[in-house]
Amino acid sequence: MTATITPISGSESASIDAPELPAELERRFAAPTYAPLPVTLVSGEGAWVVDEDGRSYLDMLSGYSALNFGHRHPALVAAAHQQLDKLTLTSRAFHTDQLGPFCAELSQLCQLDGVVPMNTGAEAVETAIKAARRWGYLVKGVPADRARIVVADGGFHGRTTTIVGFSTDPVSRDHFGPYGPGFDVVPFGDLAATEAAFADDTVAILVEPIQGEAGVVIPPDGYLPGLRRLCDRMGVLLILDEVQSGLGRTGRTFACDHAGVRPDAFVLGKALGGGILPVSAFVARADIIGCFTPGSHGSTFGGGPLACAVGRAVLTLLAPGDLQRRATGLGQVLHGRLSALVGHGATAVRVRGLWAGVDLDPRGPVARTACELLLTHGVLAKDAHGHTLRLAPPLVIDEADLHRACDAIESVVHGLAG
Ligand SMILES: *Cc1c(COP(=O)(O)O)cnc(C)c1O
Image (cartoon, rainbow, N blue to C red; front, top):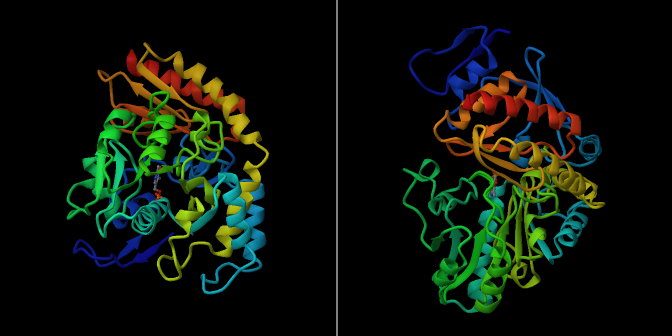
């Protein structure tokens, strides 16, 4: 293919008149906010993807859990096609036949009362922050502009300026200030520190029940029930960011189901869009949702008919619980295979359902090196921080394929140790 492209800026060339590899064009023209592995994907089905040279790979990342149902799940693609042929977008200036049912079905799945439909996870987190502050002023009676929100060290909630302002990861936070006030950071999993951080003006605690980007970090038993009791006693909202942990990933519909805890609000995203388009939501109790009024919040695309049709198909897939049970069963297989790596190249593994963090021996190469080696074995995975390998296969993966991926992981991790 011959491309004639004018660069956005830069003096090195005004145009290109030469065949260029897509990955090379990406390197030159896409901002360097990612460091992709050297593979160019062109198609996918289920747990498998294919590169431009026809090589197949098992996808053990699943778009950071956006692809919980695998690539192009037939029921999701069919729902999208059907809606594409009817109505795709209207704006919220009008009702559609999709938004009401989507919000009702999602509220029911969450056992909560109402939904603010958005697009990306970060937007749903921003919605949670706005909702918590409004609730603080209108319901709890916090003095104007004094509301505080407690968050956890090492958490990840997205990339907006407000959100990176309370991030403790210097890579995503540095040089984007000035940062917004009103957040208190406490150690993840530490109930005593959380209680100490709760003040009269605290309106909410916003946490992941399991920290995904941090490397699938599971808090101590009793943490979520403890937060629930603390929030009830102090009149503080418990808002769980289940953008990555939710919708089947951990073997339950929500990660907090393992602890038998119901939050006051959920932040959802990623898998809610079925791997097809961005669909996110803030789902909450009636007294929180009721703090919004016409014009106080919104989104041009959020809650559009195509997004809602795909979201409803996702909820239909989750309703019977089969995928959650599958994640539990295959999660036991994954746990067994990964546990055998401890002492043989890995120092610790954390597994919940089909979600795992593998800490590689810090004396060996970083996890990025392991991912580059896994690529040559036909397995796609992603490092979290430094020496942690993060795994999240699609919930639809075959047991034989899961073993195949584990064989490759075992060989790479053992190889690094040797
Ligand atoms: C990915 C993620 C987000 C942000 O979602 P985007 O769609 O990338 O904006 C927020 N919270 C958690 C826990 C996430 O994993």
